[in-house]
Image (tube, rainbow, N blue to C red):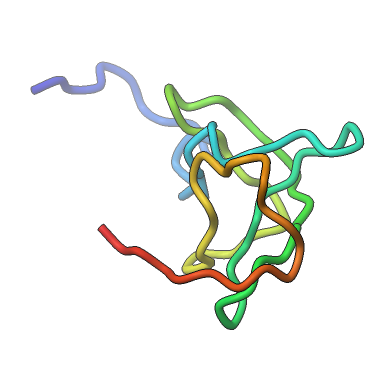
Length: 87
């Protein structure tokens, strides 16, 4: 167990949305994830924030509850139908 020895500042105390770093692809120089919408893939540009170990903060482009592809293979295509596996 570790305890903080200082008070968090306002920025540190805000909840953050983060995804596994290997979920983010660089497509045409823009950070992008594959979001699942109605069992189909949608390329979604995201704004990245801070690195948090194996995760990266998402400042915009996704919201809590969105489903994304983790470690997407290069064969994925926009509009491709997918089956969701939840762990």
